[in-house]
Amino acid sequence: MRPGLRNLITDVPGLRVGHAQDLSLRSGCTVLTADAPFTAAVHIMGGAPGTRETDLLAPDRLVQKADALVLSGGSAFGLDAASGAADALRALDRGFPVGPVRVPIVPAAILFDLLNGGDKAWDRNPYHALGRAALTAALTAAATDFALGTAGAGFGATTDRLKGGLGSASAILPSGITVGALVAVNSLGSVTVGDGPHFWAAPWEEGAEFGGLGPAPTYPRADAPQPTKRRGEATTIAIVATDAALTRPQAQRMATAAHDGMARAILPSHTLLDGDLVFAAATGARPLSDEATDSFQIGHAAATCLARAIARAVFMASAAEGDLQPTYHARFGRRG
Image (cartoon, rainbow, N blue to C red; front, side, top):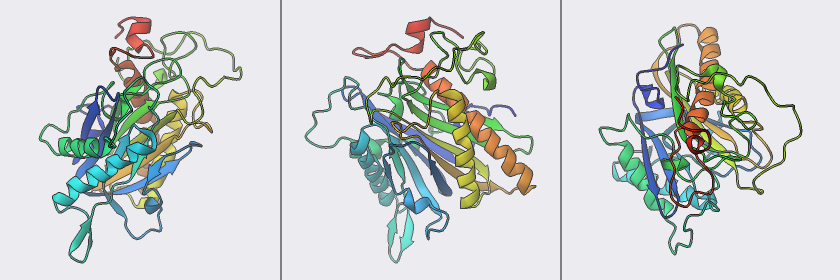
């Protein structure tokens, strides 16, 4: 495997990503959409998820494709970002046809960033406007390139001791199939080993995409960790995508496999206090040539890309006035 041209989820042809954020709010959202509706699925392993329309993504449901996926800050308030994105899609006459009406299918997931120092004393929920702005940004000509680190859904994210963020990575399989990951890292667990700068995801790093330090020289004992956030304050939410022609059950299996990447990059992950979730998106542009081999490799690539994207999210976070946690570079110095 090798990274795609951009090393972003938008290396999957036809996918677009847009961000919107508010500095005073210290929060934002990210929308993934495509040139056409795509097969979508989800797998949830965290104990405290916040979601919209995930039941619709079960393999036996009527609607098999989605128009967009939304990742947002704001806890339950952030689910309104999906309404903003859906309104923007409806204005473009996009969505599931029901007679003369089109209903955009926009599943969403949120993370908790309400205690990160931003101004949350709004009179009107700001996430509807942010969702609409992010969808609009995703449809611009430049939406195949997008910011990482302190951006979009990761704008106000934190981890156990470092500032979190928004990450992405991609891989091209020997078959030519492309796989990518997009993630907002707001975890209860740590993305770095012990007190040092080495990332848990280091064995899967491509080049120096998050510093090139390699694996940690030593690893700490497996002592019982203590949670550093309160109940409900954590969550890592992600999307893995491919241009392969996957059925919804196959897409769900890709999402399930991708959770391995989360577990490789965040320790601990999938806790009762996190809402860890992975969406899957498959554009269907490239037929499977060998279903067993291709599916096997897609799952592995999804996990690897997600692990790398998580490390990139934290590595690329930038400092802002009022931060409650240091960035990776503020704590360990500029590396890579």
